[in-house]
Image (cartoon, rainbow, N blue to C red; front, side, top):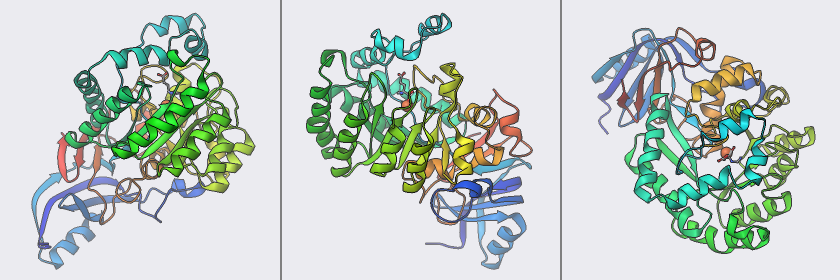
Amino acid sequence: MDDKRIDLLVHNIGTLITMRGAPGPRKGAAMSDIGAVGRGAVAIRDGLVVAAGPEDEVIAGLEARGTTAASRLDAGGRLAAPGLVDPHTHLVHGGSREHELALKLKGVSYLDILAQGGGILSTVRATRQATEDELYTKAKKSLDTMLLHGVTTAEAKSGYGLTLEDELKQLRVAKRLDASHPVDLVSTFMGAHMVPEEYKGRSRDYVRLVIDEMMPEVKRQGLADYCDVFCEHGVFSVEESEELLAAARAMGFGIKIHADEIEPMGGAQLAGKLGCVSAEHLIAASDEGLEAMRGAGVIAVCLPATSFNLRLTKHARARAMIDRGMAVALSTDYNPGSSPTESIQLVMTLGCLNLGLTPEETMTAVTVNAACAIGKGDVAGTLEPGKLADLVLFDAPNVAYLPYHFGVNHVHAVVKRGKLVVY
Ligand code: NIG
Ligand code: FE
């Protein structure tokens, strides 16, 4: 390797958030330490960070080795952070559900809409009808929006096909996007998102189909790293969720769970018992559930745009989670029903205002902790030598400005794997 060459030097950064620290998710009080450096610079070679820190030190280090930078990006005194990570999205799906807004305004609940055959099931119908190319075009548009908002790594779940072929179709779209789009995608198989209409009243048969036919085929084709289950009243019970996730784990998938989103089901306890990498939603999670998660090191992925959009009066107790020493990540939950937004910046605002996180904690929650929740902690989420050169420049004077000045996009530029992809 030619260590006399730097491909890109990002300099004149007003505040550089490095997130550097011990490997792994940041827990409890450690979530406040964002490794901020005044007047910073980042040196990049071959898509990786070579140095990130105070500008005078970075430049002195380059000069000492006689290194020259092939190109420079003047940050103009702006705020820089690691590329943001969105660790829970239902990116690939057909159709949209704006008609549910009127029902919601009349007071019909999310689970009632679902029980009437709408909700997830209406998106299942639209996804089954869509061709692979149609799904690709629609998901690409959303991924472009995520990137414009500073996201450089995201998760994408299946779960709107609910037949082997339609689940594979969704997962293939995510793989194609991962290969062709600047945003890196981690795929999660979520055949257990809902019992499809043709299995109504026969959930046992559907669970067997997911375990016996879908999971092995998804594994065989290498189409997903994780399996996820929607553990909720009227969807999958705790027992069914355990059976599904234990089977997934035995097949070598990482495991995740939509837990205690609306009703306190004991999903968080199950996440602790099975050692899930993450449990998501957790709006109704009990103290015992949180304790089980803490003990097993399960990352809590909180989704405040979902509770906002479902007009719930309760929110995930993220403040209490951090205070008891847990690692919290934040995510959009982007999907056409409970959270139709790609904006991780809006989620940061809701993380502060509705979940009680500080701006620094929200930054940790959408970088290093989010990366760890999808198995990308070794490459993404911090700006340190050897990590991917994924970086966002925000038109903001400090970290607090991002959640404070809400509902607009603060991104000025995005660098992905050392390349300027948004400017
Ligand atoms: O995470 N909770 C289950 N799944 C999604 C919603 C899916 C939908 O409404 O289409 C969620 O909120
Ligand atoms: Fe979700």
